[in-house]
Amino acid sequence: MTRFDEPKGPPVREAMDLPDESRAVTEIMLTVFRINGRLLEKGDALVRTLGIASAQWQVLGAVSLAGKPLSAPQIAEAMGITRQGVQKQLNRMTKEALLEKLPNPRHERSSLYWPSEKGQRIYSEAMRRETFWARQLAEGLPGPELEGALDLLKEFHRRLEAPLPEEGES
Amino acid sequence: MTRFDEPKGPPVREAMDLPDESRAVTEIMLTVFRINGRLLEKGDALVRTLGIASAQWQVLGAVSLAGKPLSAPQIAEAMGITRQGVQKQLNRMTKEALLEKLPNPRHERSSLYWPSEKGQRIYSEAMRRETFWARQLAEGLPGPELEGALDLLKEFHRRLEAPLPEEGES
DNA sequence: ACTAATATGGAAACAAGTTGTCAAATGTCG
DNA sequence: CGACATTTGACAACTTGTTTCCATATTAGT
Image 1 (cartoon, helix red, strand yellow):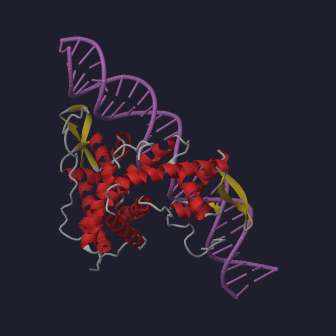
Image 2: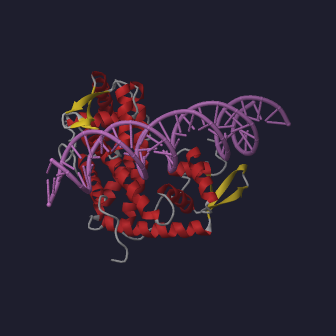
Image 3: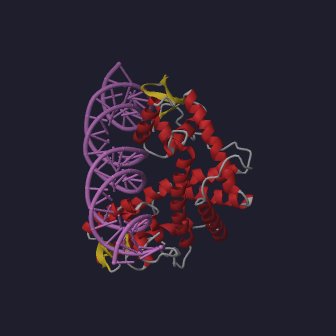
């Protein structure tokens, strides 16, 4: 690190000076952004040697957790991205033999996708590694606080589906 | 909604069946992904009418919170993205007169960036909207739980900088 | 001061996802 | 049954950020 100014300490002030109840929420937002970045980075590293990226891992997870073949739009909804985005992954993963295309009795053109034997093997190993990793991350953290934070995050997520507040009221 | 199967209910099972302490951590990971997606979506909508995207908002925030002009790599570190990625935004925002390029006395080629008058005006308005939004999100949530979740997330983020665990132990 | 390592900016290739458009398949409703 | 709206896949352009490679600037160690 040969940064030419401020070699030590945080480069940017972190604390919000807001004097009201939105401070904690704003800080949670920023922390979620940062955690998200690190999760993607570490998650990629975790499954890199399996020959997949975390996006592919997520697809395998969505289908596996569903317990049955899913269509592209269903996977997209589970992952929270658009169906076109998912379709790109599905096409690639089918080409790479991670997924199998099954005929959809309900739709002529819309196939269902299910992990191939290879896909299942890779997903199992990914989940084994993820469990090991998560156990390390949880080590020493009090269970009630973990559960409390999870509950609050879920509530936060629920509130985030509401439309943006209209101004002028309150 | 004319989905051809399972029109009602969650498309994918959410709950993990892991019988150990990693369950909550894994659920927190998934919830962080989902919250991140919604924050980006809503954040973009919040500042769209100001003519900026949330990435530009973040740049303005990094520089403003620092309280002094920053170089591209410093902004990148504050935002958690690569310096090349930030450079693209900086070049665009300078062209759009949101930022001003100041000579860096410590480096001949690496300019410092500071919000222009226009950039400051837009950032102020963005923060005003964000505060209003955060206040709505926080409404009715008990302060101690908010703070508790924030503390845990920060600890989680801190643990995520550690290298991935080696297998074979524990 | 000299050299080696590191930082930096720029450009190009790549990656993942979004948006828009079109046509085909499906569903809804009179 | 038939008109119309919705869903879906395919394709292309665009967006945002990363990776890689290179040239130049700065710093550190001797």
